[in-house]
Length: 247
Ligand code: NAD
Image 1 (tube, rainbow, N blue to C red):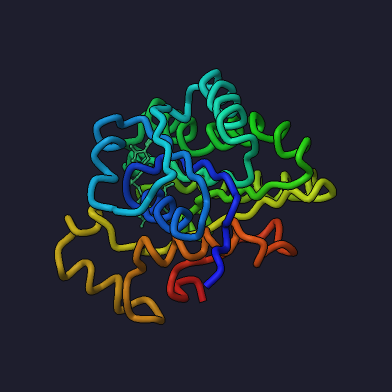
Image 2: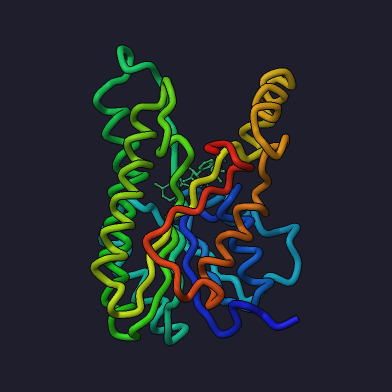
Protein backbone atom coordinates (compact mmCIF):
# COMPACT_ATOMS: atom_id res chain seq x y z
CA UNK A 1 0.00 0.00 0.00
CA UNK A 2 1.38 3.42 -0.86
CA UNK A 3 2.17 5.79 1.97
CA UNK A 4 -0.24 8.70 2.05
CA UNK A 5 2.21 11.12 3.68
CA UNK A 6 5.45 10.08 1.98
CA UNK A 7 8.04 12.91 1.91
CA UNK A 8 5.87 15.17 4.06
CA UNK A 9 7.06 16.88 7.23
CA UNK A 10 4.61 17.46 10.09
CA UNK A 11 4.58 19.17 13.48
CA UNK A 12 2.14 17.79 16.06
CA UNK A 13 1.77 19.90 19.22
CA UNK A 14 1.00 18.30 22.57
CA UNK A 15 1.94 15.00 20.99
CA UNK A 16 3.30 13.18 24.04
CA UNK A 17 -0.02 11.57 24.88
CA UNK A 18 -3.58 10.83 23.80
CA UNK A 19 -4.79 11.99 20.42
CA UNK A 20 -1.55 13.77 19.50
CA UNK A 21 0.54 10.68 20.16
CA UNK A 22 -1.83 8.48 18.13
CA UNK A 23 -1.74 11.00 15.29
CA UNK A 24 2.07 11.24 15.31
CA UNK A 25 2.36 7.45 15.21
CA UNK A 26 -0.11 7.17 12.29
CA UNK A 27 1.68 9.94 10.39
CA UNK A 28 4.95 8.04 10.70
CA UNK A 29 3.27 4.83 9.48
CA UNK A 30 2.11 6.83 6.45
CA UNK A 31 5.68 7.90 5.65
CA UNK A 32 5.89 11.38 7.19
CA UNK A 33 8.74 12.84 9.20
CA UNK A 34 7.12 14.04 12.41
CA UNK A 35 8.27 16.57 14.96
CA UNK A 36 6.33 16.06 18.18
CA UNK A 37 6.27 18.90 20.68
CA UNK A 38 5.05 18.93 24.26
CA UNK A 39 5.60 20.92 27.42
CA UNK A 40 5.82 17.76 29.55
CA UNK A 41 9.39 16.55 29.04
CA UNK A 42 9.04 13.31 31.00
CA UNK A 43 5.94 12.33 29.09
CA UNK A 44 7.63 13.30 25.85
CA UNK A 45 10.64 11.10 26.55
CA UNK A 46 8.62 8.18 27.92
CA UNK A 47 5.81 8.16 25.40
CA UNK A 48 7.47 6.49 22.50
CA UNK A 49 9.23 3.62 24.25
CA UNK A 50 6.69 0.99 23.28
CA UNK A 51 5.94 2.14 19.76
CA UNK A 52 8.32 0.55 17.31
CA UNK A 53 9.26 1.65 13.81
CA UNK A 54 8.53 5.29 14.44
CA UNK A 55 11.75 6.68 13.05
CA UNK A 56 12.11 9.32 11.85
CA UNK A 57 10.38 10.96 14.78
CA UNK A 58 11.75 14.03 16.43
CA UNK A 59 10.79 15.18 19.92
CA UNK A 60 11.08 18.81 20.97
CA UNK A 61 10.25 20.31 24.32
CA UNK A 62 8.00 23.27 23.71
CA UNK A 63 5.26 25.14 25.52
CA UNK A 64 2.67 26.31 22.98
CA UNK A 65 2.22 29.56 24.88
CA UNK A 66 5.84 30.50 24.22
CA UNK A 67 5.66 32.75 21.16
CA UNK A 68 9.39 33.08 20.65
CA UNK A 69 9.80 29.31 20.83
CA UNK A 70 7.62 28.88 17.75
CA UNK A 71 9.94 30.87 15.50
CA UNK A 72 12.96 28.86 16.58
CA UNK A 73 11.07 25.57 16.23
CA UNK A 74 10.06 26.41 12.66
CA UNK A 75 13.60 27.52 11.79
CA UNK A 76 14.91 24.27 13.25
CA UNK A 77 12.47 22.18 11.17
CA UNK A 78 13.22 24.05 7.94
CA UNK A 79 16.99 23.79 8.48
CA UNK A 80 16.86 20.12 9.47
CA UNK A 81 14.21 18.82 7.04
CA UNK A 82 14.17 21.45 4.28
CA UNK A 83 10.38 21.68 4.22
CA UNK A 84 7.25 21.80 6.36
CA UNK A 85 3.88 20.53 5.10
CA UNK A 86 1.53 19.89 8.00
CA UNK A 87 0.75 21.47 11.36
CA UNK A 88 -1.55 19.74 13.84
CA UNK A 89 -2.56 22.21 16.56
CA UNK A 90 -3.47 19.55 19.12
CA UNK A 91 -2.22 20.73 22.54
CA UNK A 92 -5.12 21.55 24.82
CA UNK A 93 -6.18 21.66 28.46
CA UNK A 94 -9.34 21.87 30.56
CA UNK A 95 -9.97 23.74 33.80
CA UNK A 96 -13.63 23.01 34.42
CA UNK A 97 -15.92 24.83 36.78
CA UNK A 98 -19.38 26.33 36.84
CA UNK A 99 -19.34 29.93 35.70
CA UNK A 100 -20.14 31.22 39.18
CA UNK A 101 -16.99 29.52 40.52
CA UNK A 102 -14.69 30.11 37.55
CA UNK A 103 -11.87 32.55 38.17
CA UNK A 104 -10.68 34.99 35.54
CA UNK A 105 -7.28 33.26 35.67
CA UNK A 106 -8.82 29.90 34.81
CA UNK A 107 -10.69 31.44 31.92
CA UNK A 108 -7.62 33.26 30.60
CA UNK A 109 -5.29 30.29 30.98
CA UNK A 110 -7.51 27.91 29.00
CA UNK A 111 -7.94 30.53 26.27
CA UNK A 112 -4.20 31.13 26.16
CA UNK A 113 -3.23 27.45 25.84
CA UNK A 114 -6.11 26.33 23.60
CA UNK A 115 -6.77 29.33 21.36
CA UNK A 116 -4.04 31.98 21.50
CA UNK A 117 -1.44 29.26 20.83
CA UNK A 118 -3.29 28.30 17.65
CA UNK A 119 -3.02 31.90 16.48
CA UNK A 120 0.66 32.08 17.44
CA UNK A 121 1.63 28.89 15.70
CA UNK A 122 -0.43 29.48 12.57
CA UNK A 123 0.91 33.03 12.39
CA UNK A 124 4.47 31.79 12.73
CA UNK A 125 4.17 28.98 10.17
CA UNK A 126 2.33 30.92 7.47
CA UNK A 127 5.51 32.42 6.02
CA UNK A 128 6.95 28.98 5.32
CA UNK A 129 3.66 27.74 3.86
CA UNK A 130 3.28 30.86 1.68
CA UNK A 131 6.79 30.40 0.30
CA UNK A 132 6.12 26.77 -0.56
CA UNK A 133 2.62 27.58 -1.82
CA UNK A 134 1.13 24.68 0.05
CA UNK A 135 0.40 23.50 3.58
CA UNK A 136 -2.25 21.76 5.65
CA UNK A 137 -3.35 23.19 8.99
CA UNK A 138 -5.37 20.90 11.26
CA UNK A 139 -6.78 22.29 14.50
CA UNK A 140 -8.28 20.17 17.28
CA UNK A 141 -11.59 21.60 18.48
CA UNK A 142 -14.31 19.59 20.24
CA UNK A 143 -18.00 18.74 20.15
CA UNK A 144 -18.08 21.07 23.18
CA UNK A 145 -16.97 23.97 20.98
CA UNK A 146 -20.00 23.39 18.76
CA UNK A 147 -22.76 22.70 21.29
CA UNK A 148 -21.35 23.98 24.62
CA UNK A 149 -21.19 22.10 27.92
CA UNK A 150 -22.15 23.07 31.46
CA UNK A 151 -19.02 23.57 33.55
CA UNK A 152 -16.80 24.16 30.53
CA UNK A 153 -17.55 27.72 29.42
CA UNK A 154 -13.82 28.52 29.15
CA UNK A 155 -13.02 25.33 27.21
CA UNK A 156 -16.11 25.71 24.96
CA UNK A 157 -15.19 29.33 24.18
CA UNK A 158 -11.65 28.32 23.24
CA UNK A 159 -12.82 25.44 21.04
CA UNK A 160 -15.52 27.54 19.33
CA UNK A 161 -12.92 30.24 18.73
CA UNK A 162 -10.72 27.73 16.92
CA UNK A 163 -13.53 27.07 14.42
CA UNK A 164 -13.98 30.75 13.55
CA UNK A 165 -10.23 31.22 13.36
CA UNK A 166 -9.73 28.23 11.05
CA UNK A 167 -12.52 29.25 8.67
CA UNK A 168 -11.07 32.78 8.42
CA UNK A 169 -7.57 31.44 7.72
CA UNK A 170 -9.02 29.11 5.07
CA UNK A 171 -10.54 32.15 3.31
CA UNK A 172 -7.34 34.21 3.60
CA UNK A 173 -4.85 31.59 2.49
CA UNK A 174 -6.83 29.37 0.12
CA UNK A 175 -5.52 31.17 -2.96
CA UNK A 176 -2.01 30.05 -1.95
CA UNK A 177 -3.05 26.40 -1.69
CA UNK A 178 -2.93 26.48 2.11
CA UNK A 179 -5.77 24.53 3.67
CA UNK A 180 -7.15 24.99 7.18
CA UNK A 181 -9.55 22.47 8.72
CA UNK A 182 -10.85 21.55 12.15
CA UNK A 183 -11.45 18.17 13.74
CA UNK A 184 -14.14 18.13 16.41
CA UNK A 185 -13.84 14.92 18.42
CA UNK A 186 -16.75 13.76 20.57
CA UNK A 187 -16.35 11.31 23.45
CA UNK A 188 -12.95 9.72 22.89
CA UNK A 189 -11.97 6.99 25.33
CA UNK A 190 -8.52 7.80 26.70
CA UNK A 191 -6.66 7.53 30.01
CA UNK A 192 -8.70 10.53 31.09
CA UNK A 193 -12.08 8.85 30.50
CA UNK A 194 -10.79 5.59 32.03
CA UNK A 195 -11.03 7.41 35.37
CA UNK A 196 -14.81 7.82 34.98
CA UNK A 197 -17.14 5.20 36.45
CA UNK A 198 -18.35 2.41 34.16
CA UNK A 199 -21.90 3.71 34.65
CA UNK A 200 -21.00 7.19 33.40
CA UNK A 201 -19.08 5.77 30.44
CA UNK A 202 -21.99 3.48 29.52
CA UNK A 203 -24.30 6.50 29.70
CA UNK A 204 -22.12 8.33 27.19
CA UNK A 205 -21.85 5.32 24.91
CA UNK A 206 -25.59 4.64 24.79
CA UNK A 207 -26.27 8.25 23.76
CA UNK A 208 -23.98 7.97 20.72
CA UNK A 209 -25.58 6.74 17.46
CA UNK A 210 -22.63 4.37 16.81
CA UNK A 211 -23.01 3.09 20.42
CA UNK A 212 -19.36 3.37 21.39
CA UNK A 213 -16.82 5.95 22.44
CA UNK A 214 -14.21 6.94 19.89
CA UNK A 215 -10.58 5.84 20.03
CA UNK A 216 -7.47 8.02 19.58
CA UNK A 217 -6.94 6.09 16.34
CA UNK A 218 -10.35 7.24 15.03
CA UNK A 219 -9.12 10.84 15.42
CA UNK A 220 -5.67 10.02 14.03
CA UNK A 221 -7.22 8.56 10.85
CA UNK A 222 -9.17 11.79 10.31
CA UNK A 223 -5.90 13.73 10.75
CA UNK A 224 -4.20 11.52 8.13
CA UNK A 225 -7.03 12.30 5.71
CA UNK A 226 -6.86 16.07 6.26
CA UNK A 227 -3.06 16.08 6.16
CA UNK A 228 -2.84 14.09 2.92
CA UNK A 229 -3.57 14.93 -0.68
CA UNK A 230 -6.77 12.83 -0.38
CA UNK A 231 -8.34 16.02 0.99
CA UNK A 232 -6.66 18.44 -1.42
CA UNK A 233 -9.99 20.12 -2.30
CA UNK A 234 -11.20 20.43 1.30
CA UNK A 235 -10.69 23.57 3.36
CA UNK A 236 -12.59 25.64 5.93
CA UNK A 237 -14.41 22.53 7.20
CA UNK A 238 -15.18 21.02 10.58
CA UNK A 239 -14.90 17.24 10.54
CA UNK A 240 -16.93 15.74 13.38
CA UNK A 241 -15.30 12.58 14.70
CA UNK A 242 -18.01 11.78 17.23
CA UNK A 243 -19.94 8.67 16.21
CA UNK A 244 -22.84 10.86 15.14
CA UNK A 245 -23.26 12.66 18.49
CA UNK A 246 -24.37 15.92 16.89
CA UNK A 247 -26.77 14.29 14.43
P1 NAD B 1 -4.10 14.89 26.61
O1 NAD B 1 -4.22 15.64 27.89
O2 NAD B 1 -3.96 13.40 26.64
O3 NAD B 1 -2.88 15.46 25.75
C1 NAD B 1 -2.63 16.83 25.62
C2 NAD B 1 -1.15 17.03 25.56
O4 NAD B 1 -0.92 18.43 25.44
C3 NAD B 1 -0.40 16.54 26.82
O5 NAD B 1 0.68 15.70 26.46
C4 NAD B 1 0.08 17.84 27.48
O6 NAD B 1 1.33 17.70 28.14
C5 NAD B 1 0.18 18.77 26.26
N1 NAD B 1 0.09 20.17 26.64
C6 NAD B 1 -0.76 20.75 27.52
N2 NAD B 1 -0.49 22.04 27.63
C7 NAD B 1 0.55 22.31 26.79
C8 NAD B 1 1.30 23.48 26.48
N3 NAD B 1 1.03 24.66 27.06
N4 NAD B 1 2.30 23.37 25.57
C9 NAD B 1 2.59 22.19 25.00
N5 NAD B 1 1.94 21.05 25.27
C10 NAD B 1 0.93 21.10 26.16
O7 NAD B 1 -5.37 15.34 25.74
P2 NAD B 1 -6.10 14.57 24.53
O8 NAD B 1 -7.31 13.92 25.10
O9 NAD B 1 -5.16 13.80 23.72
O10 NAD B 1 -6.62 15.83 23.69
C11 NAD B 1 -5.89 16.37 22.58
C12 NAD B 1 -6.70 17.50 21.94
O11 NAD B 1 -7.98 17.00 21.54
C13 NAD B 1 -6.97 18.65 22.91
O12 NAD B 1 -6.93 19.88 22.22
C14 NAD B 1 -8.39 18.37 23.38
O13 NAD B 1 -9.04 19.54 23.80
C15 NAD B 1 -9.00 17.77 22.13
N6 NAD B 1 -10.16 16.92 22.41
C16 NAD B 1 -10.01 15.75 23.13
C17 NAD B 1 -11.13 14.95 23.36
C18 NAD B 1 -11.05 13.67 24.13
O14 NAD B 1 -12.09 13.02 24.35
N7 NAD B 1 -9.87 13.20 24.55
C19 NAD B 1 -12.39 15.33 22.87
C20 NAD B 1 -12.48 16.52 22.16
C21 NAD B 1 -11.36 17.29 21.92
